[in-house]
Image 1 (cartoon, chains in turn green, yellow):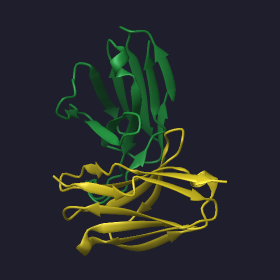
Image 2: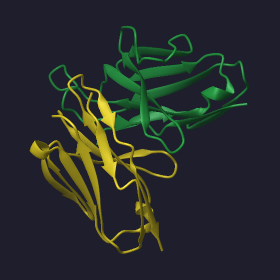
Image 3: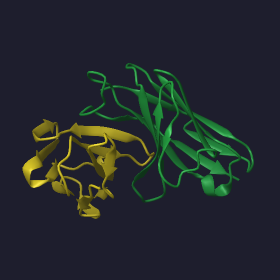
Image 4: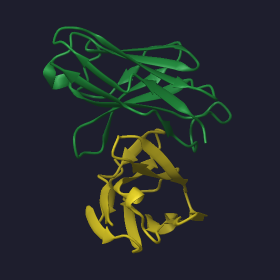
Length: 120
Length: 108
């Protein structure tokens, strides 16, 4: 299957600093990528949809100024957690889906390894 | 929106046992995927199965789209099968809707 690479896998940062997480599709182009957050013992929660060359679409309740998303190329999306606080500590996972005839409908989703963020 | 329910929520088995995990969904879906999340958090694609039956080694899956459910079968369980199994369906907006997962523990 397709490969999505995410790094760093683990990061510890001080409260008030910013952290950037990268998500790359290694063997396919992804005009759309997805960022999820997962709390302990829970399922994945979609935070935002990243669109290459345009603004990301954020889910209700997700602060766009806190979680900055940039999708500058067809293979790279970044999530920056700005002015991080302990409550931002979580597991963040990115996903990408290959296109078929200019649509991601009915295409398989592939996931990065995830990033465990700890804010101290 | 679409609701996805997985059962059982927890399952503890001895090594070598077989298991069946279920995923029910409340409306028609474009596709369905099964994932295994290992203890390190990595989501591993098991099956992309909008309908029909697929097999991959000791694992197989069946989706009956008309009855809105999917089953994941694990045979001859191994300790490395432990983890959380998620079912996710694609809604009409191309977004994945996730079940709460089944936590599987395989004891040696």
